[in-house]
Length: 446
Ligand SMILES: Cc1ncc(COP(=O)(O)O)c(C=O)c1O
Image (cartoon, rainbow, N blue to C red; front, side, top):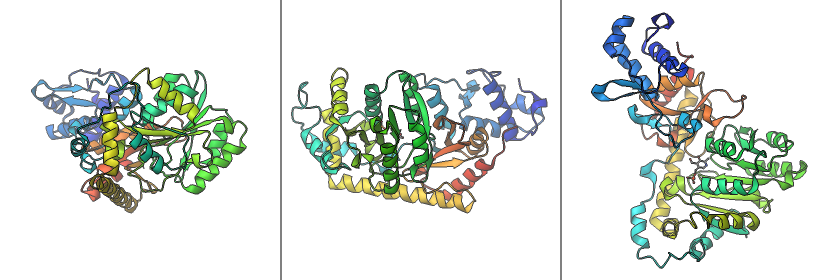
């Protein structure tokens, strides 16, 4: 199976690289059993420890899985519910000491849902099909805290992606173009594939989407622009107020810019450090702003708020009546409790500071090792690497998992990266920064 002549280095990295290539080429099929460590060691004339180290790195990178006494197998992709792009992004965290691949909040930093559930019972009668889809008290709270005054319509959806996909279904037709950030959120690329829309990439710098890339994208007449105003996933960029004004100028001056629907995904609203920002302040008739509570209050709450022009929001609400109907009012009551209970509010504020500290310390550690990742907000760091696969295998050998960068990219101007969820780096920042710096410098395998 192994091609000893193809091995340039009989080190754990060299062996891992060769196996990884055989899997990528299909010479080793998903589910296929690998020979034993002892057989490989004697075939290659290396120690069993060297082969075991290679196996550990491959398991950490999600290439193989070990099933106790039954042996070691090429990993089968059993997450059929995820797209190929997202499958590539999701690493196998099982063999790792530290999983920094997830892009999700640290569970320890979330306010207690159990306590909130206790506080909101007994519930009033919230089970009527024809009542308002949003609890009036939550609606009032959201309007009071919305980043623009007097938002025309507001609703509550089952997470930011639910809201965004439903807005897209309203405004995007098969064959339309949609401008999206690259690097950006892989699920948006999948969503455009499903809608039959053509993505037009927008570039990102430390202040968000660049005005020049927006102008270029608008010249291709997209029907919508999707952007993340804060803690952009994966780069961590938050839009400055100046940048927001510059983007508004572009939308106002490029022909057709005034007919584009701008969808803003403020997915990390309450855990980011940057101030609220929205183009709706200037363009209320064409901006839908989505605010998720997944990062601050837990992804499993599945609640986000969405505000914007009534002509779009009301269509989404009406369409949802033929599906989920409304977002569980029980969950809405839990969210309202968590947004107003002093203990829960303090918990979320502390989480924001904890993430700020963890990200800052990792960024400083990387800078000391000569790696500049900008000044990311939120929980993620976008790490430039020499080679994506080598970096993942290298990191896995140190017991750390990060997310592959390529699923976040749809154009070829962005070099290889990993997305590292620094918000989950609870300890050992120096060790993590060392491992990341080594991984970033790792040459292509084999
Ligand atoms: C950029 C971005 N948008 C949307 C989401 C999903 O948010 P929600 O759970 O509210 O659907 C995420 C989750 O990681 C995200 O990173």
